[in-house]
Amino acid sequence: MSLYNLDKDTESSGDDFPNKFCGILRSSLNGRATVICLGLLRLSNMSVEEEENAAELKIPDEFLKAKCLMNCEVALILEHKYEQLQQMADDPMNQMSQVFEKSLQYVKRFSRYKNPDAVRQVREILTILYALCNVQLCVLGNLCPETVEEAIAMVPSIKTRGRAHDDEAIEKMLNDLSLIKKFE
Image 1 (cartoon, rainbow, N blue to C red):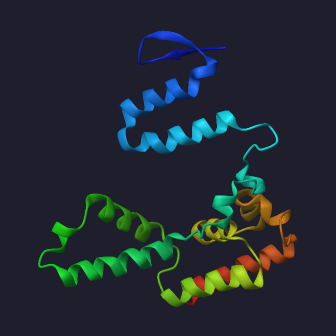
Image 2 (cartoon, rainbow, N blue to C red; image 1 turned 180 degrees about the horizontal axis):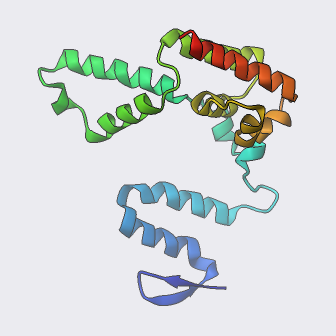
């Protein structure tokens, strides 16, 4: 296998591909290169048995143990921080970076739930009543599928991992989520 190295206009063998590819990314993507680079290096060192597959929740332990947040939860946190910055400074725009502003705009735009009580209810229902893990909860809470088929396509592990749910239970879960949204 040979790969084309854009940095030197020469071909390189597949053995050093992650290092060469990361060099290309560093020069073209600046700050984002590190994250992409680490992912490629990690995948290159994984065995077939350890292959990651998010659809089946085969993800590293550090991600399973991490607390995932829905967009609406991030929006509440960032809005609170925004209010704090406004109170502390005469001109809050001087205190906030462009990344902060863009992040706040993004999570506000794509938040399905605006009311803090609704956000709390979604998390409680999906964790306590349906025993979903954080990753499953966040995908369903962010994307709000309308049909069982959509939910299974977005989170295939909902039928197979942990407390596996049948179609009727998934339908009830989706109805509960839509009721929260409706009465928000």
